Each structure stands twice: as structure tokens, then as C-alpha cells.
Image 1 (tube, rainbow, N blue to C red):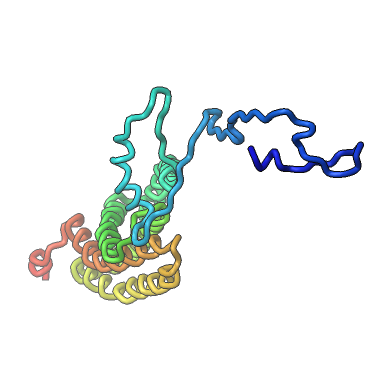
Image 2: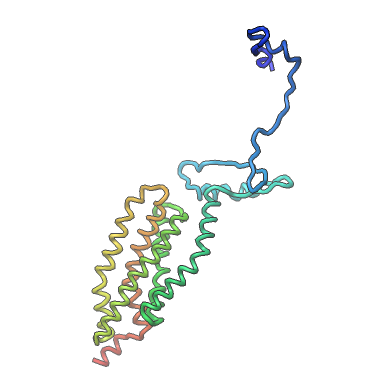
Length: 257
């Protein structure tokens, strides 16, 4: 107040600056909200923070969530989480609505491709194997399973199906030539070994530059770990599943011979 009373104002009559106390008797102060923030037309108080060094946003959120939600709120107040947690939840919800449609299209495509049911079933049974490699990769690097990692896992399923389709189609082609089923299974698995490994290797090497990117590193690790682990499992699991589903047994082959 003292500083305000000492200010000078311009007087048009005097053509000079005069003390403000010559035209003002007293000052009264009133508090008011200069800015009212609303969200969905509801008054909102937003508290923001950045994760401490060494913590990801998800780790920081998990650490403080229980303690914050345990706080007693006054009547009429409610708590909602925003930021990266909210954005990730909204993105995953939008993705979940479209995922069944894309999965159905992929399933119908694989069935129409072979015109049978057992071959597509073998191919789809290989897809969950990628989870093992994804978990190992994220645990080793310490990265969270973010929304970009989810996108990487979805794209990874397409890559694995491609490798499985190539292998199953080669097995069918070998058997259709009149070769013994066990020999066709073995020869097809051996002949597709190098193409599958080379395709997986080029994709893994292509993901290396993304490891330095803070936004895409989780996706890169998901694709690299899942593809490396699942490609090896594909070369083992697909022939084994094919032999089980089509009843190929070494003993039977020997008897026929």
C-alpha cells in the first residue's frame, strides 16, 4: 500500500505529475480469482510434476498413486488422473475397439489363403510365443510397456504370421510333390531356415536406430526381443505343430518304407 501511495500520476490540468494521494482518499483491496480453469465446464485444479531422475512416468505414477488416492477429499471434490496415464488409456481404448475387426480380417485372410483350417490354426498358435521375447527384452532394458510398445507388439504379430505362413506353405508344397510327409516336413523346415532368420535379422537391425529415441525405444525393444525369440520358436514350433495336427510320425514312415 505504501508503494502504491507514493506513485505519481499525470495531471492534465497541472501539466505535470502529482502524487496519487491528491486524487485518492484511500485504497481497499479485494481478492479475486484472476483465472478460473475449467474442464468439461467443471472448475479444475491441475497439479503437474515431472518424474525424478531414474524413473519413467509409469514407475513414478505407480509409486505415488496409492498414497495420493488414499487422501481424504473435501465434499464436492473428486480426483482424476491425467497426463500420460490418461492419454495412454484413451489410446488403448480406441485401439481395443478396432482390434477385433483387424483380427477377424487377418483370420479370414489366413483361412482363405490355405482353404483349410488346420494350417491357419498352426499359424495363429505361433503368435502368442512372441510375448516371451517381449517380456525378456523389456525386463533387460528396464523400459515400460508403453502405448508404442503395444503398437510394436501388434505389428510383431503380423511379422510372425508372415514367417509361419512361409514355412507352412513350403511344407504343403513339399508334401504335394509326392515326397514322404516326414521328409517333406524336414526338407521344408531346412529350406526355410535361412529366409526366416534373414528376414528377422534385417528387421531387428532396422530397429537399432530407434533405441536412442525416448518415444520409440519401447517399441523397438518389443519388436527386436519378440521377433528374435519368436523366430527361433517358429522354426521349432511350426514343424512340431504340423506333425501333431496331421499325424506325421517317424514310426509310420519307417513302416511304409
